Image 1 (cartoon, helix red, strand yellow):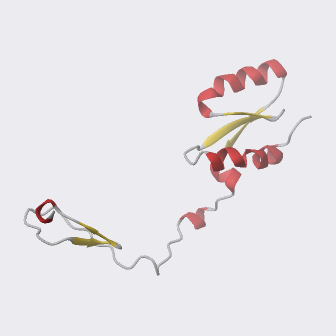
Image 2 (image 1 turned 60 degrees about the vertical axis):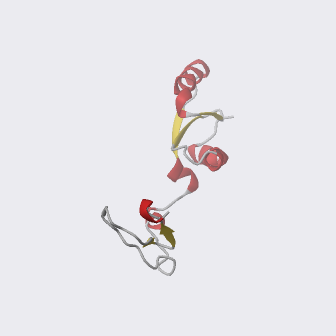
Image 3 (image 1 turned 30 degrees about the horizontal axis):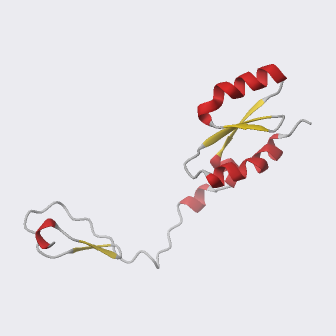
Length: 106
């Protein structure tokens, strides 16, 4: 059976869900999947079985939209302070919701 690109994209979702750092996966039209480090195996498999290789990226598979990546919940971000390195800091510096302790106040 020959799988369409849309079918292979749907079938690739578990690979991306189980490997959060995976950016791309290669699939062949006979439903075989190959990680990037095994691309040569994908090429060999495709050549010997006369099937097509399809490259599927994470955004495509998980349907992440560009605008969704840029959304920040403004209620959660209350305070961000950027402090340059100072030699005589004696009190903790507030950054976001946590405190960063300096060497001087350990």
